Length: 511
Ligand code: BG6
Image 1 (cartoon, rainbow, N blue to C red):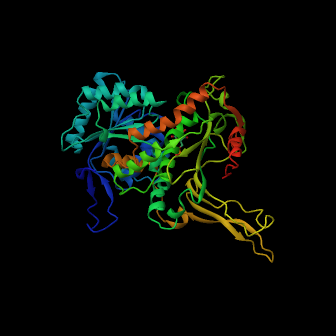
Image 2 (tube, helix red, strand yellow):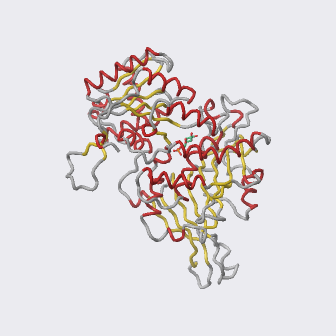
Image 3 (tube, helix red, strand yellow):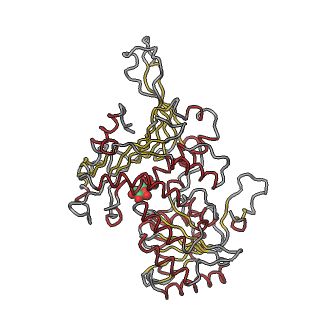
């Protein structure tokens, strides 16, 4: 972290361990500011940061887009997004302060004049608001435009900075659609920005419950001894969504569930779960361990039985009739894009030898839930008879990423009675019960970290490459092997996914 980026809250004494991390003066330029992500997540998160007092008074926000908008019209647009999406209450004073730093630059991504206008705007903000020339460019746009934007920023000198200032770029997934395209995309961005100035967003890493995996594993002594092949039978990582693709056909079709969320979010969850303890919490030490474990992943030989994919059919969900994927607006009637993907991956390290990791993600499933479940081995010798343990499953430790954030430990207990019967019970930690503090949204944390220049939560290019190395063979196999199996909306996915686990004598959890 560059010390110049960190302003300490003057209201707290210097030995207060809870010193707030407050971003220094800067402008944030959002390309694609009228898009869905900016409206739903980025703009509300910026307001929430301002409301929590975590942005500098000089903070300025520049929207870049085709619309012929004045700054005033842009401010109205931002206000609507804030009113609809902010987590914290609306306060006029905070809004007025933020609104004074809003600017809009009209132009197409490949229009050189627009970058001259952007240059002028950033200079004006440095003069009038004191942003000191610091700027982060947030590319919330399809990757096909990255090249034009980066080149124009470079040509206009907008990526240059001296020792006292910084210029950073923030990019959103998808980082390519396979290994080769990811490398090409990375080359485009690295032509202009240094690796330390590139922030790749994987919003799962901004979630409280995901950051807590490190605390849970490495700040406690009781779990780590069990965290290995001696005790763990297998691990299931699930990201189930009840929503369909909504209005995102243009993005989703041709991408599918595996590229959309497994290549990035789920493999990052796997890396945090399976990695060794880093020697410190510095970005490079953390990255080293994640890269080691991602580099140790291997797929089973027979992808026909160790992978599964599906596409949702019409059905009922939450008492509402919903349409099938092929009937969604903008989807070709013969699309083979999967909306459900599952596969087994093995971690070839001493800690995890013989412990399969099963990953699954899907849309229009029974319920929205993301969780990491460590399912433990059976005890070597069962004292109780089968009739006494009929309702006893394997012990499990479940990190509930969302919703209902927390951690559950499942184990057997005697049922109160004169008989001896053992049944599953659970011990729960729930954020809502244990903490008075509300969890910030992932994007609040990540935008703040970009402004602070604090990189641990942003995957490096190598991690992205390793993700594609796992996925590419599966995608190639699927591309030459027919269509995904249909599954009814509101169910738990295609039957091939159940067969995949049954083959290993296991079954999916029904969260
Ligand atoms: C995004 C995917 O990365 O994550 C979406 O592109 C998905 O398809 C979304 O719906 C889910 O995010 P969250 O935070 O609601 O789990």
